[in-house]
Length: 468
Image 1 (cartoon, rainbow, N blue to C red):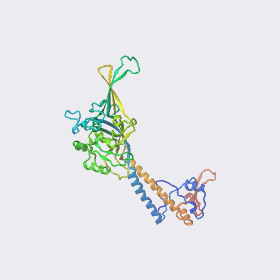
Image 2: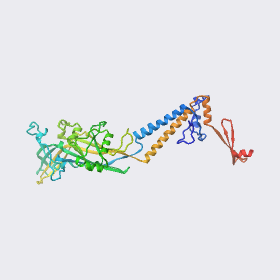
Image 3: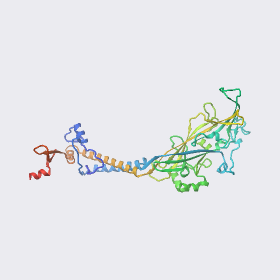
Image 4: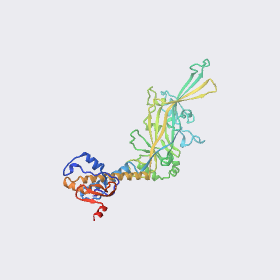
């Protein structure tokens, strides 16, 4: 056991506790100034080996604990200290689409709509449901465009009800308070809105690590629970017709996808009737989002005792990026993202659009109510870099130095009484430095070192030669 090494990462003072000496004398001033701060002098490192099985085992145990608990477990597994952590920003885009056959594009000539019949909808008045008062109407995404847009690319309104209000100008009114009066009003629910699909397309970018990507290049998941988000992730499968091309874009194989899902302890993939991935984003059925949030729009009511299908509500979507997880072994897995859905505390949500008719004295106001969707991006990514690795090594070296110093202090205070005093005299030899001047008292010709114990007098080589 080296009590005082010749080279150390840091210089911490060694001191002996007063009550461990043969003659316990406690002087707080001397302990702080001389033993700890060394205000009255300075130290040279001196190598002294003390053979002690107990202290040697203590040092080995402490150093091994640092390697296992701090360097490997904490730095590498928990804190991921070897990674350069960077924040993420990006762009989000939401788009609504009406039900179609075979996932075709509504702008294709051969694409056909796939609405359910009104008689099958329990919330619409029909021959099958004569007691239901609400009337329904079919609308596609283009009929709704006036109500869905105007909130920015990252937000959209999914209409569930529309009220068409016809107004006529009062010709006898000149600069009066109410220029238009309502002449007709009709309210309709949007038929089969739960089978509309919501496209979420997003990209991410990090300037700190010069990395970027989009939704089509990563494996996506859904977190089907609320805070504290301790449920299993649900993977989103690629649509079969695009699967091979998307794997080529991601530069991974089916085996990599399986390993990624296993690492993140994901459950079975979502049924593609409810959600699937495309090269330009992920598609969710509106009704599936309601199921995730445990919402029944016909049995949930607001403060006016109106259903949320009729009055509207808010939905928050968080896209969270990640490529590492705490409490895991170091690994190299592709970037992933997950969706987290939550409800916004709205009692109603609506927007209005106005259409002018051919008659300049008439106008039509459309009052749109529905599910307002707001999305945002968060997350941090980590990539191995030399700078954090070097800092991790330096931090470990510092802790090693603290352990070494602690072991030395324990060794210095291990023996009580005379034995401990003898060890202290061997480790800490103190000398007084004196300068001898010429007769004129100005120039110094030699110096004298005298040991404070009085056992030996050391002189400089110059004075020794003069005496000889």
